[in-house]
Length: 365
Ligand code: ATP
Image (cartoon, rainbow, N blue to C red; front, side, top):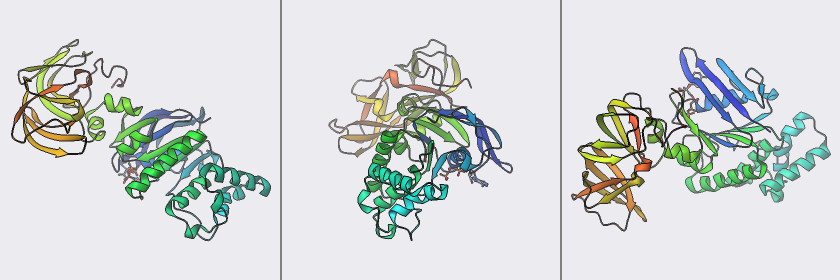
């Protein structure tokens, strides 16, 4: 069992804050994604969990025991470095055995464990081959074998598929996820790729500028973004934001945009001033008679769907609709939105307004 609790974790390098007061919980057996743009503090967070970096303040608990200041080897957490980092002069068996040999485990026991790992990874037939001549996929499996053979409580992986081309990356992502499902070991995985995070993760932490913006299951993050940053970072094309000014009372369930009135999830809090109306491209319908009009600027054919770029009174937006629907550049169309999926944000803070949509998702702040 390996539950990891992160409490007010902070890391400073001199005056620079790389991670600011992060708090989240990784449950036992979860495949947990740390997602965010380059430089947001993902790797630093992962390295603190593994013990490769000590926190400036805050705590890390592994199964209830505080490990924040312990050395890496005292934590029973495996950090899977760039997966191709193998010992080139050793064969596959020796590469996988290596961590057990350094622990001083008896040889018979090592043989047994290596055989088991090779079976799990489907590489029994290459155990005696030198790693030099192996395909990229097999090298990756050997590197994984070396990490899992010592049966750590948890695995830390930093962009393990980053260097691979798209097709191979997808295949390895599936294998990694399947391996995790067979072993059930807690895994923390750093990526800047939102699709990878959505496809592979049980839960996602979205970080930006050293701050945790939101954490939860992929669908919750997608459907109920807590901030403009999250709504914009997740989804392709990202959510549209239409700026408007107004006064919304708690309990309101409609918003007026340029004279047209739209149903929205019932607001739990009021707001006034500069606001943003957030709608995902796939939640927009193009209709003949809608009161809210927009001009078609461009269309992009993607097979079963097309992306339509539109200009409205409140700004430009993109809609993803069926390719079967005929749309002409230059024509004016009506827009209809799926009320249950609309998010509203304060423009100044980027924070989502509490509504029946995101009740219970957002923090107190
Ligand atoms: P990337 O995907 O680019 O690695 P990341 O989200 O993993 O991004 P980190 O590697 O955690 O980001 O780095 C966060 C910030 O902390 C960066 O601005 C980085 O330059 C800085 N940083 C990381 N390690 C150190 C260090 N040892 N000394 C000084 N600054 C550091």
